Image (tube, rainbow, N blue to C red):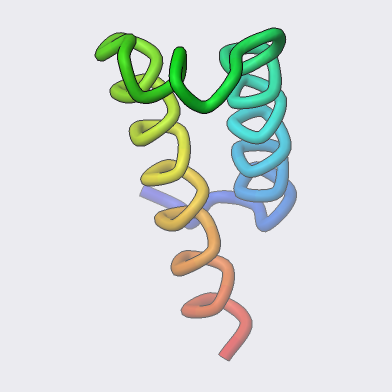
Length: 61
């Protein structure tokens, strides 16, 4: 399988960042802490961002 284009990882980062913004829009910190599905969604998006950054660093170095 050929390696992914670096731009694909950048798109993953941007898409996940936007998803986090949409997910937490209008919530205060107490709501964020209380709603498990919000926590899980945000955590998963940060995992995706971290993985994409790791792949970018690996491919760039």
